Length: 198
Image 1 (tube, rainbow, N blue to C red):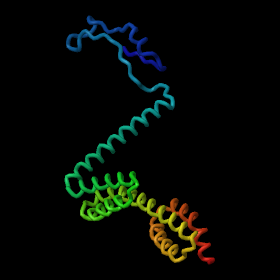
Image 2: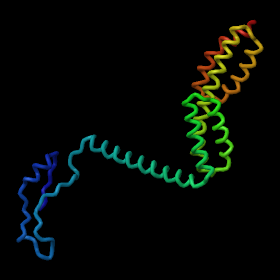
Image 3: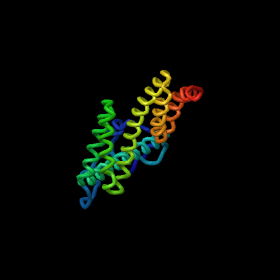
Image 4: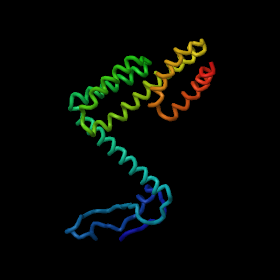
């Protein structure tokens, strides 16, 4: 005999329920001596949290799978000595950027660029994103110091030096992300206009 419960109840309360399975009623050919109460989540009324919990559970499982797969891929790639060296250089470049040692960071980044063409296509896709982030960080630090120097030189009236610095700024500026470009433009545009007047 089956009992159906169509609402949320405390599972401890259900344990107190007397069951109708007695040893003498169960044939010996089947499982003998079983007496208990089993609960199942079935149809009935389900609120939105039921579905949300399933979506979240699936999302977590998918994230674990993707993370595990990516980690396994990286482990395979790192069997190649050049790939291993690139990962080490990326880590070192990031550390030098955090320490604000732009020259060392640039040196490490350059070594990474030299090794990049020799790695597999799939690994390149993964590494490229990380290298791009590092390049942007190095460029941001470079252009920041160039802008400061440009403004200082322009205020001193050294037009030729200022225009030389402006050319250097322009080279870096072209490869910067759009949102950062607008900040640089706002800083140098008034100074450039003043230089053109003189």
